[in-house]
Image 1 (cartoon, rainbow, N blue to C red):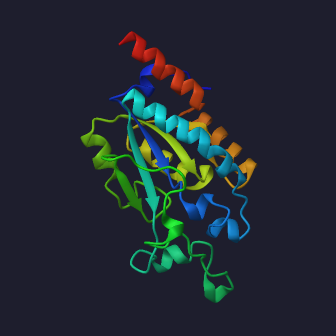
Image 2: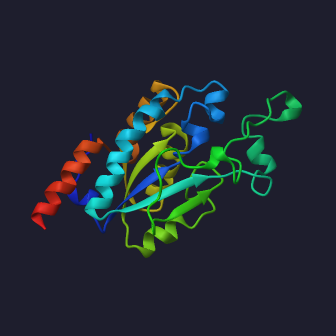
Length: 214
């Protein structure tokens, strides 16, 4: 496991990024749950995430919410065919987080007044959005990633964050996938190639220690 300085998590430098914690991805009644994905890990993760968000706010960290939406304006032919071509027998893409729908709303977590919400239409929250501008304007150099799914949108955004020269950390117990092995796979990949993996209690403890030093 990579070693790191506690300043990686420090207010003023770090931002907590909450990726796609939305009804269609997390609620059993949402689109993913209805099509057979096991949302249990996401449901179990959210109380830990809520505690981490509260602690981040108390410590003075920026909290950034990422929200996926899809509609006819952004669902390109290439995007709709990402699992295969319809004419070759691939199943049609499942509609999730349609713009303005209940499914696109946040699941249990909510941005506080003044906290940025970045709307995305692809797996990575950096693709075609102003996320990088928002972070750099705030002087952020380190990103703490949470949300769903660990192996898809969280990992995609984390990778792009590193490629844009941010320090990246995966908060292991505040991210979730629909399959345990997919979550573990991303944890191992991040540890080996991309950044730091840490637990929420470890990070909260670091904030507490940094506040005493200050």
